[in-house]
Amino acid sequence: MSVLVNKDSKVIVQGFTGTEGTFHAGQMIEYGTNVVGGVTPGKGGSEHLGKPVFNTVAESVEKAGANVSIIFVPPAFAADAIMEAAEAGIKVIVCITEGIPVEDMVKVKAYIADRDTRLIGPNCPGIITSDEAKIGIMPGFVFKKGRVGIVSKSGTLTYEAADQVVKAGFGVSTAIGIGGDPIIGTTTKEALELFINDDETDAVVMIGEIGGNLEAEAARWYKASGSKKPVVGFIAGQTAPKGRTMGHAGAIVGGDEDTAQAKMAIMRENGINVVDSPAEIGATVAKVLG
Image (tube, rainbow, N blue to C red; front, side):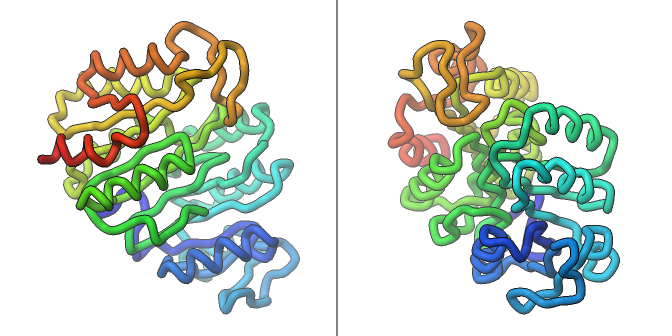
């Protein structure tokens, strides 16, 4: 029951010995994630949290077989860290870092375009496959194994949706926090597509927000796919004033399709079960699966 990561994923932490990397790597190991080491240039050969430290990502791939990376590197160096992981052949790269310059992400997007790698984020909570692997900063105890996938731009709403799905008597297969920056590695549509094509996911919760056209693109793809797998949708930012960035860097209403109301209308037109409040997510999942 997993999309992208599972109990067999071999995870490394870039920025392993820093404050954030240390804290969250500890939580990931505690959750049962298969963390095989970390990367901090200049500290290779030492040990941290009982795991080996490597100087480069390439070394971690060669010596520990790493295939998933999570990045806790300051904004100025994060783009380089992503490209280093892609260059080394890492299959799934999760970038938690917030505040990476847009110009840097333009270069990253071009760099990874023709490589066999998937970037989640940046400025995201990560990915979790319930009871198997937590590659991120989400509170693991909220997630219980099940067959509902979650794709979300918002970290906190990811946890809220998971909590409601579990309390409604269902569990979560995988949750993907895609991040709220203007340029991200994996779009709403791409994440939705993974779940629609996953035999072990029966329904999907899709959480978006104002700004950009990712949700409209995902909704139109969903209708065109002809899938009968139910999708429950919510858009945050229904009272946001036009032209003002709200929370995430990408959450700004520019065109007519960027508002919450417009996105919700497009999602409804394309067969998505849209809720007006996040408090209705759990009950709506129960209804569509009932």
